[in-house]
Length: 267
Image (tube, rainbow, N blue to C red; front, top):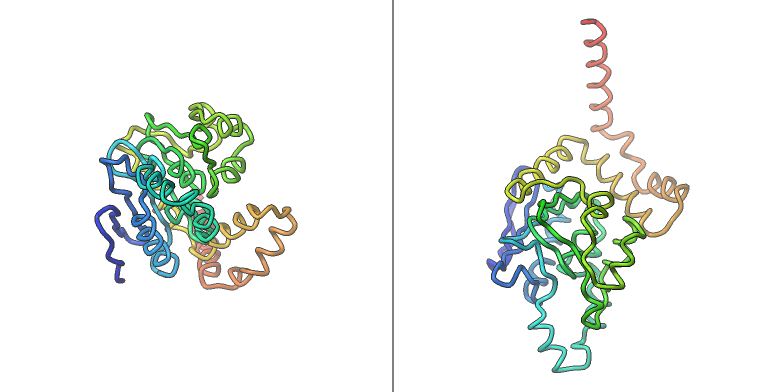
């Protein structure tokens, strides 16, 4: 396995079948620059195509998970051309902010939310499948206060969790803890335990059949396209029906039967 080489604003490590990517600009609260976003795309495209990696953990360095876009850079670009070419960038960037906020993947994403996530950082989080949050972490979409919009996946992904997030999308206020804990966060732990907890969830996924996990994620993706349950099931089976005839399914069922036979004999 050859991990792509990227500058130190992104840290990449592999533990078994789990890839950990760390946004590493703590002095800028891990705000994502244009160059950083391109490097994230390189890493994520490689992850998608690397068969030995099954799960992504995304986290940040320091006290923030991610404060969103590098607004100093964005303001410079905005001043040089109307909108800073933002609309074209959004339309062309099919994977969204940091190559994550609207990326559709067959592999599970885990957000190890070590600290606060704002703007684009929050858009990353709401597109993750599992969210482990520090007990001090906050999350919000302040874009409307700055004349902008959470336009790269944040709005639909937030509302897919609950429509109760909508008042905070249109006021720019941080989403209250009770709503985050009920509708978004998988677990809330002390900041020092966030990454280890995320890796435990990652290992729990790795312990399962990769075929079955990825078929499950694909059905979630189809559901997120707005299709009804009948279409989700039928299209998911058409795309991935071979999972039932695969080696993982045969081994899993055989192991279960052998375990139950042993259990019944003991009892």
